[in-house]
Length: 123
Image (cartoon, rainbow, N blue to C red):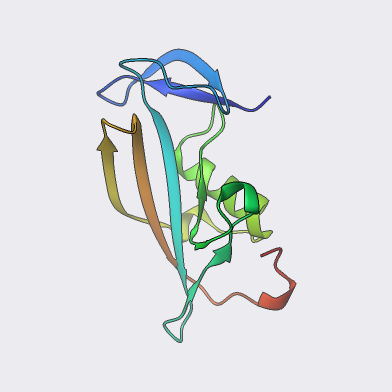
């Protein structure tokens, strides 16, 4: 079962984890990561989410696994979800925030890159 690290309100690791799908305990938070991939023509890459996750179109993202930091998490999610390798040096964190009602910290990244053979991605 996939585990996620828990953080306190100051985004410090608590040393505790939860399994994917478990409720987030009171006074704890998890991290959510997203990436916006834009090519040199100014077009953004979006994916159709699975039916389990509402089947709508969205940018790529997810949750870092236990032991991963935010950057490692987004790199893993992009590889898992669409089969694309991205370089951490090319990522730009453009927004970071916290939602107390959702019990999450989120990091939004941006990367400018032309994706070769886009039709071969596992979108």
